[in-house]
Image 1 (tube, helix red, strand yellow):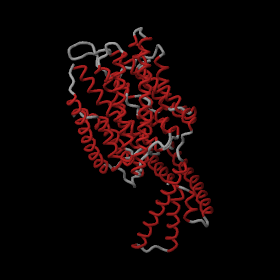
Image 2 (cartoon, helix red, strand yellow):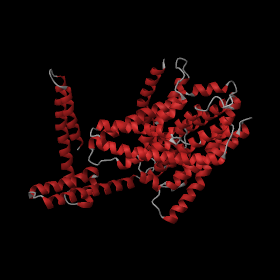
Image 3 (cartoon, one colour):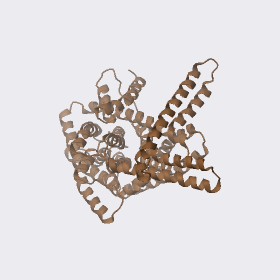
Image 4 (cartoon, helix red, strand yellow):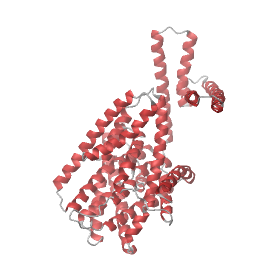
Length: 528
C-alpha cells in the first residue's frame, strides 16, 4: 500500500465512521483513531510521511472555520469568562503542572523542554469536543463552553510551545521577551483576521455565483493562517477572527442558494478532514513505538504519570472555576452559559480529549539545537505526548457516552422547542408586517390579500406546527392537516417532474447542462 492508497482508505473510513458511530453511540473521531491504530499495526501499511510543519496549516484552518460556522460571536462574548478560565488560565496551569512533574520524573529533562511538553499536551482538541458534544445531545450551555475552549486554547498553547522550543534551541530565555511575543502574536493575528475578514466580506458581495463564493470561503482561512504566521502572529487566532467576522457580517438573508450549498459543502469538508486528521493520529503510533527503543516500562510509567497530571489538574481546576463562575453569574445576573450541576462539571472534565494540535506539535519538536546538538529528550517527549493523546482520546472518548447516560446529562429540549416556537412567531409576524407595508403602497384585491395573509401564517406553521394554538386556536388543526396534505401532494408532483426531467438527460440530443439547470430549479422549489 502506498501513501495515496492510504489516504483513500482514511477518506472512506471518514465517511463510514459517521453512520457506524451513530449506530454504536460513539464519536466518529474516536472510531477513526481506532482505525488508524489498527492500520498502524499492519505490516503492509506504510509510515505516514506528512511533514510535521504542514499538519497544522493543512488541517486546522478548514476545521476551525467549519466549527465557527456552528456558533456566533454573541456566544463567545456571553461566555468570555468561562472560556477565559478554560482556554487561557487552564492551559497555563496545565502547562506548568506537567512541566514541573515531567522535569522531576524524567531524568535530565530540561525545564524548557518540559514546558514544551506541557504546552503541547495542555489544549483539549476543539474538533473532538465539538463532535462528541454534538452526538451526545449535551445541553447547549456545555456545548458552547466546550466549543469556545477548544477554539481558543490552541492559541495559548501554541504560543507557549514556540516560546519553550525557542528557549531550548537557542539556549536562552527572557521572560519579558516571551510576554511581549505573546501579546504581539495576538495583536498581529487579530489585525490580520479582521483585515482578511473585511476583504473577504467585500469580495463575497461582488461574487454573484454561489460556487465562487463557497470557493472563496475555503481559501480565506488558509490565507489568514499563512499570512499571520508569516508576520509572526498566531495563525489559529487569525483564522478564528476571520471566520467569526465572515460568519457575522457576510450572511445575506436572501442568498438561499449560497447558504444551502455552503452548508452542504462545509459539512462534507468537516467530515472528511476530521476523519483524515484523527486517522493520522492513530497511524502515528509507528513513531511513538519507535521512540520507545526497548524502554517500554520506564517510558510507559512516565506517560502514565503525565496522563494522571493532565486529567487530575483539569478536574481540580474545573471545580473551583465552575463555583466561581456560578457566584459571579448569580451576582451580575448575566446571560452566560455555565454548568448548573456537579454532573455537568464532571462531563466537562471528561470531555478534555487531546487531538490534532497535540500530535502536530509533538511531531514538530526539532531534532537539533542551534549549537548542533540533539534536542534534549526528544524521544521521551514524543512518546509521553502520544501516551496522553491516546489515553485521553480513546479511553475518554469511548467512555464519555456511557458517562453522559449514567449521569443523565441531557439537552433541555423543552427550552429549545420554546425558542423554536418563538422564532416561528417572529418569522410569521415579520412576514405579515411586510405584507401590510406592501398593502399601504399597492392596491391588492381582498381575496389575494387574504391568501397572502394565510401564507404569512403558514411560514410560522412550517417552522413550528404548534404555534397556531397560541395565535389562532380555532381552525388550527384543520389548517395544519390541509397544509400537510398540500405539501404531500405538491411533493409528489415535484417528484414526478424531477423524474421526467432527469429521464430527458439520457435522450438523444439532450443538453445535460440545460437539464441540470432545470433540475436545480425544481430542487430549490422543493425546499420551499
